[in-house]
Figure (cartoon, rainbow, N blue to C red):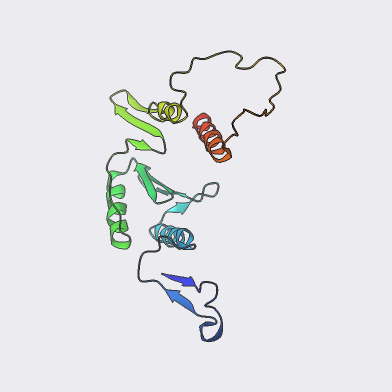
Length: 181
């Protein structure tokens, strides 16, 4: 794997040169982009098509009408499809190119729980939602139709605690994620 010279090293005798990386890329600024570029080019070499709307989605259709779907999130991969032979082959080929670990059947991913039964697959956020409520101290809160008086104006007075902006932004982000998933 090669990367551009880091700032401060690209001058003098190093001008126009690149670094050959022999070790893990974790922690370097270019590492996620370099890893994904190598990963996606490997999948394309294996005959997978990269999604246009979602570049982390790869698909491969077989002549027998079966399909394999792979999606990447950071350094986690979900691999599914109805062509078990092609899935096993892809796993084997990826092991030769990358250091991968097969975690087996998906049970929990990004706050979403996946439960399989004879009736089908159930996708739920049974764990994510209470964890969010517990983290914010609202696990025992009661629902209400209107949490504030109508036309109530919030103003900071001398004894009001300041809002933790980072915590608030994290909470809003998690609530948006919960509502979208």
